[in-house]
Image (cartoon, rainbow over all chains, first blue to last red; front, side, top):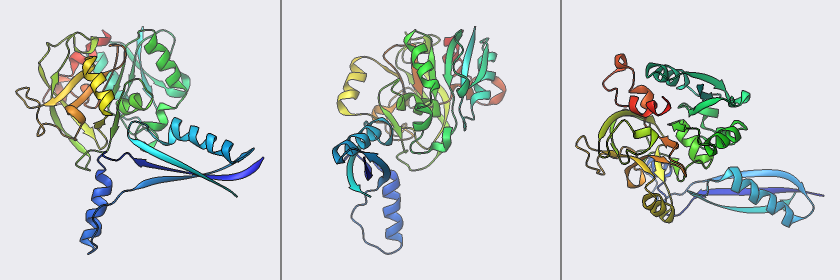
Length: 83
Length: 225
């Protein structure tokens, strides 16, 4: 077994309204920054052991499918690195 | 012969639900989620509140609690199951109905009376009404915007699974009457079975005559009678 950190990034699908991000963008503008658009995402870092990198990706994928993301509104991607 | 009102850590409408159900003549009791659904439960209410502090997403944690296996089994047996507000979020997160409830378009928590058009009168939840009736029931949520993919929405409409839409007092469905930016003004839906329903507005807050301006929600709770 090898020790990995799997990073799962969950973001709203394109086209799904993100009022929180828009509110944040407006706050940045109030601070004097010019921002055309702002997208936010949740990042989960999962320390786990797996036989190889593919297996680590599979485990993280399943965690995203079953809990970390809601497939109705979210896309996600997974990256793994040895730790 | 009792309706189980499931209490998660952070539920806060469970007592209101029990009281409103008793008012319409339905025996109900609060059931701690860790104790499971009693095998003789005649119905299940997933009440409003902030289960697990809305961690990750509203309803996400409660939807994965072991008690939801009991709820799904009861639903599959035809036991009436309703999710209200946070209970609706739990219901959609657990796959009892399609779609998702997420942050209001206003980005604000909204606590106000709304009008709902009854889209179907042939379900247990709406047998007290006629199709097209307008009822007044309050909302109280920050994450009530109904989102659904285009294809799933087309199926929802084709299968006639929209139970309530936000509307004007005269029943017209308009953008202005949509409090949270919900797709197609959807306020409540049924699942694969008509005996499973979720809605963001609170019928238990529009049942007791002493509580306020409307008792229109009582008809929804009479599904358990």
